[in-house]
Length: 221
Image (cartoon, rainbow, N blue to C red; front, side, top):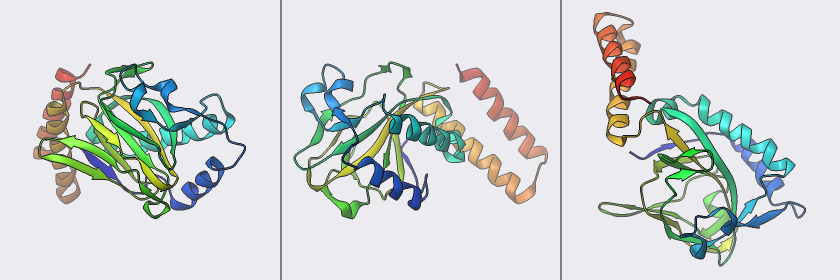
């Protein structure tokens, strides 16, 4: 299941981050340093030094916003959000076809996400291309918007031809390994919330909640 979150962070905050990230004094490292052995040859971008003060300031804010969002909580059932990277991709740079490693330094990758920090009009190219059963899906979202997608997908970032593409990427270890189980529980959770909004707490809501809770208990790790 793929889903998008609009305005995970407000536009004014993203604009301030963009100015700071593009400042001349900011230290960027080669993207190959964090790529798996099979992806190093196709990863051509730069990443904010994780030891930098700017990274230590911004990364927790992204992490906090993700954990607080109700759609992410319901659809992803995150046990851990980890591996955040701020990437910068300029003219001639991109990230070729690859699949994310199953295990990162801080957890399993069930879901991957990209938080776009540059408005689409500020760069050309640079679309996130996801290989799905019926073809390839191109994703270019507004600054502050997020896409979450299965880490099992082959994907790539097409080369930037003009401007600078800034993004924050990371991974989610879900409480459920199975994508099918996550989707079923998301639908059940959505149904019970809609019912509660319409009718309040009642017998049907309690039965749906019992089923949801016990399935989560049965399937969860």
